[in-house]
Image (cartoon, rainbow over all chains, first blue to last red; front, top):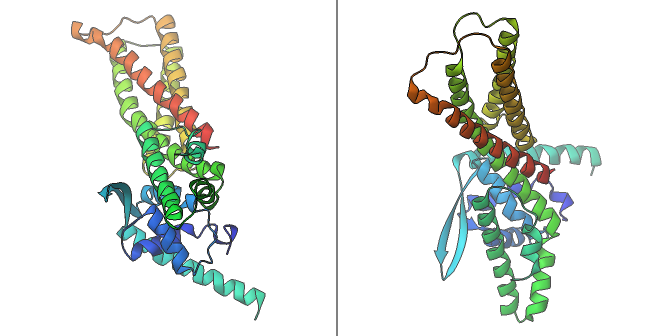
Length: 105
Length: 201
């Protein structure tokens, strides 16, 4: 799926990834690729501003960590983020139903 | 490291610390992407080009970062307005004289109150996250408009006002200095907000 296809869904996808555990930007990119079976053709750089957007909205909390000589900003999902993820999932399922109904079998 | 991170971040405008934080995070991620490719046997130049292609068009990433910087600057300027406007209003009220100020002075004073209320309301909405669209440009505009109206109105009041100035203690003569500093603080923040907001549009 190309970038336009997931436009507007990136925040939900990142929150779903963070629900599995805290992660830094590049690990999230790798997890998104892996969990989509390499089907997600996403400009990876967009994940970094998206993480800042989620942090500003209160859906994720970021902090700098130091490990193996590498400084990384690690994010964890918040309670508000979990609620937003549930809403995002509901919206996506509703959209999928509408698309299926209109496009037919 | 290479031109990619520079290409993304060169045009970013906004709060310095946040900007540096964003650059460090993106740079770190890009370094990891390059290192991963080199570990897989790719030559460095090819690894850099491949990582850049995977990260996406620099102007697209920059535009998204800039939106975040604009939101942060809007919040800062809104906080400046929420603190600075009541303080300035109190200081300017202390300059007020006694007795009947006359219709013109009363109208000018109400105009200043209106500009203060408008700027304060916009700032409160931004801090409460009820107003996010073009918030930086809006905060900058209302902040500067308030200062122009308040300073211009105060000047006119001083010129046409015929009443006696209030009898204030000598220590309060520092008020004009404090007022000027407060106005400069608000003007600086409002101008930054306008500049950052313009970069985000």
